Amino acid sequence: MSDTDTNQMKERPTDPAEILDSQAQLEAFRALVQAGGGQKGVEEQHAKGKLTSRERLAKLLDADSFVELDSYLVHKCHDFGMEKKQYLGDGVVTGHGKIDDRPAFVSSEDFTVIGGSLGAQHAEKIVRAQRRARQTGVPFIQLNDSGGARIQEGVESLEGYGRIFFENTAASGVIPQISLILGPCAGGAVYSPAITDFTIMVDRISNMFVTGPSVVKAVTGEAVSVEELGGARVHNQISGVAHFLAADESDAFRIVRRLLSFIPSNNKEMPPQGQSEDRPERETFELEELIPEDPRKTFDMRDVIITLVDDRDFFEVQPHFAENLIVGFGRLANHPIGIVANQPKVLAGVLDINAADKASRFIRFCDAFNIPVVTVVDVPGFLPGTSQEHGGLIRHGAKLLYAYAEATVPKLSLIVRKAFGGAFIALASRGIGHDCIMALPSAEIAVMGAEGAANIIFRHDIEAAVDSQRETVREAKIDEFRRKFSRPYLAGKQGLIDMIIAPNEARWMLIRALDMTIRQRKERPDRKHGNIPL
Image (cartoon, rainbow, N blue to C red; front, top):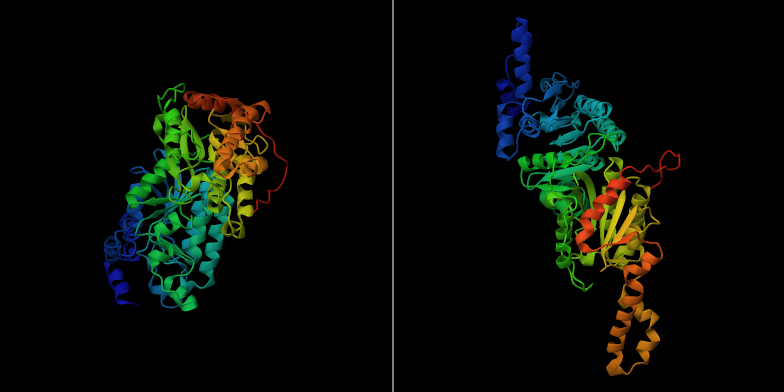
């Protein structure tokens, strides 16, 4: 046993077995549970800028609502001196409590106990909490802070991860699952958060990777720091593994509460209603100034979104990843909605591999939990290029088409400017299953943009012009194509969109469409499950 372990053992309360009085014995056991790995471990945790497992639950849950379960469980390992390292609770705190008066099951790993490492009993506690959450129809929230699999327990620890992953999968689409990474999360541990619906990481504290820097160095020769390999910014900006970047642990808990305010406790319930007094019929004249008439000019789609939703309250998901597409939650007339929108400020709002993945996962979450999807469209198409094609743009784009087509919740689409090619099919076509499609008068709906189309259709006219007039002729033909074939009235005549609305009517018309479609029932073929192009 190391000196640290010896010191921690000395700090722990008297062995309850030595106490004869039953009430005193109960109090001694409770003190032992609360002590975790000892005061020294707590101090080391605080020195790293981290809270302890119980401090975290106290901040996350409503005051005095936590009920701890399985607190006396200990591991059964007797190899490598582990019989001298038995701590009540075995390095994870599990139970149930309330968040804004709504019940939830939780697990919180205790890094002060054997580095929060996962063994068979540790895993058993988490699995029980997961199962109870699914059976009672309430969210499951896991707080990860662990050195990974407990090597001393061998493959039993790996089996424990397998059981956790199975429960994650069984609960997927049944109850919301949220992961907070509040320290290290390595090896097999990373796959449970990846299966859950949302992952929150804390800047400069959280890290996730399948293999650590030392293994990377040994195998590839690449020298990389923990932060560069799997820090919070890496997974929020580059990999897309994480959904939220918290400034600190308190901010992470705030994000959980905000997230839960938009989503139901399970797939049988409707999402919680808001309390806004923002008038449904409020006119949105701001859109006339926010959306430029010139299709080549950029604007911030977030400004459009907050103009439409109740109280200008928009909660963005994955704001740092695939920034050419925006997803998040808002409300219309107090009813929660999921929003998918192109961002013209980034890559002109095109769809690429990452954007398709980001939107697909979000749409499927909304559909699983009865949250209508509103799509705000200004898209020139899918991003061209060999890197995208070789990276599987077709396969990733197919996920987006699949997600929209599969969803049975109300799907409303508002075309504010461009809707071209295959991107139009995904984001705004009746054929893929959108229930109500609206367009502003500024909308352009076509197979491709006017510039590209005019260069093809009017190629001979442009080439026949004298050199000095060629560009003038080209611009004239582009304007001609835009007037005749791109404006929304042609799509309206063909029955491809439901209505053309003025900008000031946008919020009110979306609310009216939502009010009608929220009652719809859609039948799907009887099947075990589809085969989404992963």
